[in-house]
Structure formats: structure tokens, C-alpha cells
Amino acid sequence: RLPNFVQLKEVGPRDGLQNEKKWISTADKIAWINMLSESGVKEIEFTSFVNPKMIPALSDAREVGKQIKREPGVLYSALVPNMKGLEFALDAGIDAASVFMSASETHNQKNINKTIDATYPVLDKVIREAKQAGKLVTGYVSTVFDCPYEGKINPDQVLRVCENLFASGVDDLSLGDTIGTAVPTQVEQLLEVLMKHYPKEKLILHFHDTRGMAIANIMTAMHYGINRFDSTVGGLGGCPYAPGAAGNVATNDVLYLLHGLGIETGIEEKKIQDAGLFIQSKLGKILPSRSLAYFANA
Ligand code: HMG
Ligand code: MG
Image 1: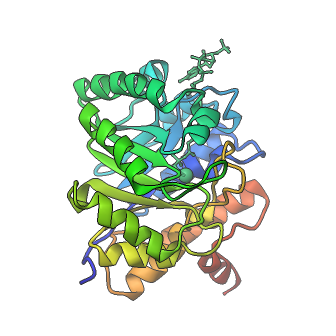
Image 2: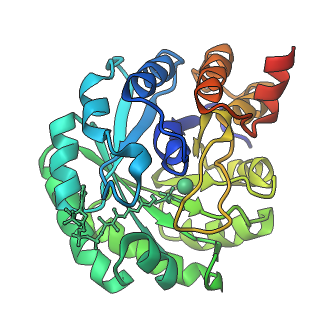
């Protein structure tokens, strides 16, 4: 029943770094992304083209995009909130744009400064222009289980946002457990609703691992046939506009699970561990991944 192959999107250079206070130099970001490019991962979200005052850690987005080495077969994506971001992102050479909004009204406003209804036309234009430019577009929906401001989010509320983003032309959707609260029954309830409307190939799950539930949630989603997940090297990450959001599920830990189950990913674990040690040393702190810690001490 489990998938034979799982596709991981490495979002460390974006979700992983966006919340870090310590400035990682442009040269170190590029060196790190180049290491990730050589790991066998098929998609890397390498930065965000957002207001640099809101996410100072990624204010060198354009330089990074222009200088990273492009590995054939790897899709390079970036977060894009509006037309200004799309213009910069196209100039920096994205293959795919990731637009984003929230299923909860309050988180949407804190994160992107608009109501949900006011967000749709902005993203609609970005999605259409990006498609016109021949790019893939993923739509992130945040707070699909719980919102740090509003509590539980009803799956029907998530469905409404998904319907709007698909109507604008996104290729697929990444569903965010932004603050890492979900347990497997919540994953089941949401997938039961969404999979009545969309094929599983269109759905990606994006777990933060605040409470250590992400691996259990990934296992649950795989039993529903989902085989695309977002993760970060070392378990870096968090959203500065979602209090309580810890890092994403660690690529290192997901790989240990998947390869142990005999599921292929095309990714070399050792290269991900090395990339984890590299960024850990640049940040000067121990990252949360258990499997990285084991590797470092072995
Ligand atoms: P706004 O304030 O409504 O926009 O922000 P604005 O058009 O009024 O512009 C304000 C200023 O930002 C202006 O500069 C613009 O030029 C500038 P000023 O005149 O003050 O000097 N600006 C930009 N600069 C560069 N690139 C741009 C851009 N746009 C405006 N693209 C906006 C609206 C959405 C831009 C803002 O709220 C923003 O940047 N938000 C980003 C927040 C963010 O990045 N959050 C984290 C990512 S989401 C996440 O982590 C969740 C996810 O991982 C899934 C999950 O875990 O659930 C995806
Ligand atoms: Mg996230």
C-alpha cells in the first residue's frame, strides 16, 4: 500500500533560513544550495522574493538565484507573493513559483498583510503570468490544521482556498501544518475531504515538526497514497509570522524512514548529512534532526 517512490522538495534554503536571526552570507548560501543540488533531490526551494524588511535573512534572493549552479533535472523554485516578486524571480531564473496564502484569516493578514478575499486577485495574476512565462506554480496553503491565532481550522475552509488556487491555475498544492500541531487523525480527516476533489498527485504535505508528530503524519499520508512532501535539511525552519512554529520535518529523518521502508527517493543520505553539518556550522547551533545528530556523533 505504501508508494514505491517519494519525491521530497528541499525547502531548507527558503523555509529553513527565513526565520534565522544569524545572517548567512550569500557565498555560503550558494555553496550550500550547490551541495543540495548534488544530493539527488529533484526540487529545491532556494529563496523568497518577498519584502526584504519582513524576511531580512533572504534579502539576497536575486544574487543567490543568479549565482547558484543549476543541476540538470533539478527544479529550482522560490516563494513569490506578488507581481513585484514574480518580476525579480523570473529575472533570477526560477523554474517554478510558489505562491502562498493561509486558510485562516488572521494568519493570512499577519503574514501577507491582506484578507483572504483580497489575496485571491493578487495571486491569480501572479499564477497566470507565471504560467504564461512557462513556469510551474505550486500553491501553498498554510494553517490547514490549526492556526496560532484562531485555533482549529475546518477542512471546508481549506477546501475553499484550494478551489480558488486551482481555479487560477496552480499545478499543485502544498498543505502546510504551519505550527506543527497535527496528529494523524487530523491528516486523515483533511485528506478524506480533499481527495474527493483532487487526485493525490496534486497534493503535497508540508509538516513542521514542533511536537515531533511529522514522521507519524507522513506515514499516515503515505497510506493515503500521498508521495510528495516538503522537508528541510537538519529540520531548520519556521515562519516568523506564526508564533510557535518550529522547524520543518528534517530531510535527514524522512530519508531514514523512507529508505528503511524500501521507498526510493533518488537522494543520497550521506550528501544530505554533509549539507546538514555544513549549514549547522555556519549557523553555529545544533539543528533539531535526530538523524543528523547521530551522524555527527558516529
Ligand atoms: P505589503 O506591505 O502589503 O506590500 O506586503 P506593499 O506592496 O505595500 O509593499 C510594502 C513594501 O514592500 C514596499 O517597500 C515594497 O516595495 C516592498 P517600501 O516602499 O516599504 O520600501 N515589496 C517588495 N520588495 C521585494 N519583493 C517583493 C515585494 N513586495 C513588496 N515581492 C507582502 C505584502 C506579501 C509583500 C509582504 O507581506 C511580504 O513580503 N510577506 C512575506 C511574509 C513571508 O515571507 N512569510 C514567510 C513565508 S510563508 C511560510 O513560511 C509558510 C509556508 O512555509 C507554508 C507553511 O509552513 O504553512 C509557505
Ligand atoms: Mg513552512
